[in-house]
Image 1 (spheres, rainbow, N blue to C red):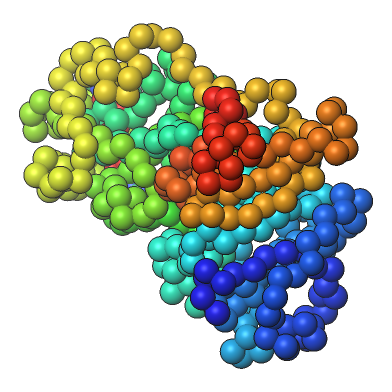
Image 2: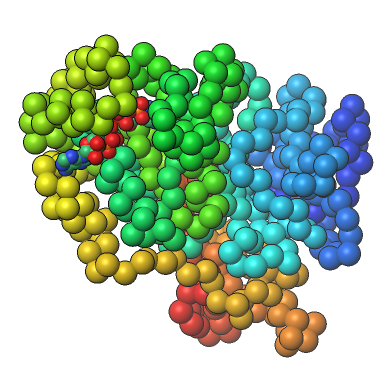
Length: 423
Ligand SMILES: Nc1nc2c(ncn2[C@@H]2O[C@H](COP(=O)(O)OP(=O)(O)O)[C@@H](O)[C@H]2O)c(=O)[nH]1
Ligand SMILES: Nc1ncnc2c1ncn2[C@@H]1O[C@H](COP(=O)(O)OP(=O)(O)O)[C@@H](O)[C@H]1O
């Protein structure tokens, strides 16, 4: 079945894994009954994509902590419980599911605030395909939908001792509600003033290697003889806190992030001279002579790669610290010295996703909502425009737009925008 013939609906299902519901055996023609009963518990949506039938809903592994996902493969006639990556949404009293393209299913949660009602299940994005190869299982990934562009994560790279940590600390101190640090995992030993879980997650190599095999890392690299890596969770913790993520990673890691779905700004910090770099590294006094020598040897190649490749969007020379910090703030649009906040949606829209029906037209989803305070029969129409979405798992799906429309203004073909975007 082609994606364009996809039907989605709500169906009460017996979830016993061995049994193939009779309705599936008949080839699933026609649309499933859509019945949204807000009081019903454990209902599921059924979404068909090619040979696969995604049954979404109920609780996850009986824990009731997140929305469960099961896949029925029509060709093998087998059920599969996929590996579920990404931050999962909390369960709601119900949801709608719509396939936007062959890559992802849009989930609209009922009874949820506008900040929490739009989610995506990625079923065939590059990230999911990559993870399927690593894990050799069926994989899906959750990603929360957010309005507008959203702040891009910032990747900072540069040789050891150039001042990355110093610059990042200054930024986090001046803008504590704006930025959050992605706490990497490393197999190197902690320095005297370093705290586990704050500067790094200090980890045993074997544990880190297992987690890498399990697909838990966005990127990892061997640097100065130790393993360093950014877990998917490290980035998601910051994003969930509503902050802009800063990653302090080496050039190899930056290259891997560039190739991932995490759209970031890449900044390379350069020393004014090699001699000055050596001076700073020795003055810091955190490494043995042998380690200093190794870091200096690696610095040569890192500086060459950082300067010559087109990997980095910006190169900053950290000569005078204050001058470099001002340049960093300027390129991040922070030179007004004001803490930048990303406000959540207005409270008045809290009841938006109640009793919604959803249909899809060219990546624009028409949602009919009941607005309770206006009475049970009162309905409003909204367009959720997902035609310009970006990013996705691991992390958020940005670029959503949602606005109210008046269906009677110009007919359904000329849906008129009634008000400014509300989502
Ligand atoms: N690829 C990758 N590199 C990392 C990560 N965390 C830290 N690094 C890099 O590893 C290198 C060594 O870091 P560290 O031992 O803290 O020493 P420092 O650079 O002298 O502060 C630096 O280039 C960091 O940017 C990570 O998660 N992934
Ligand atoms: N612009 C600068 N001028 C002089 N010293 C600096 C400057 N930037 C950082 N430092 C010092 O250099 C040392 C290395 O800085 P650090 O932030 O630890 O580097 P990195 O995180 O890149 O390894 C620290 O002792 C720091 O105080």
